[in-house]
Length: 269
Image (cartoon, rainbow, N blue to C red):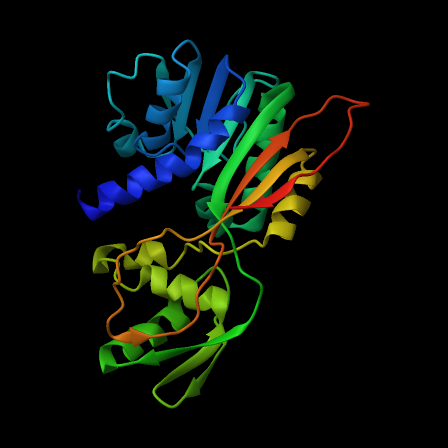
């Protein structure tokens, strides 16, 4: 099996437990891309109406035509797209980091929009990258090219200022900045400019909880996911020893009606 196909199978396996929290009926995925999650949804909820929203018409055109109960919609997920109280379930799967990269306000707008568009007792499901607790880590550059690329990253990364200290053969910096650099290191030159505006590691678990509750949600489930068991080794000219145990988070949030109880479940994979 091709490495990318294997990783997609692993991702589908990790998303499957979330299907148990979805309320059938009207389901919407915000930031659906080319339809990977929509395919999972339509297999599990064939009798539901499923809406896939994305700003890219190019990605929407890739959605398979055989997904008969899926309706693609081109729209900005930070704007009010649908009427209030429309959907039973909404999802953000690996799309909120792109919204946060525009601004924190856009991120808050997207959460609030999803809250408003849900029916009472509706469910919002989030699968997203998780920022680890702050700590200083080292990167060692084995080639001048890798050092030059890091310096370019530090100058051009727009979501936040990259603070670092030069050490012998490398740099010391915060782990979140190191992770963002490593995630972009091998991106094609034509995608570099876009990647410099995007951060994957922006919120800790506590910050996700605060943002969700600020939008009005009750936290039903919060689950941190471990790294994939196998992953391609791609940074042969950069050495580092740190590892992130939980790179992802899954949240199940409820739009509770008044006088409903508030409860939070925290778990780790």
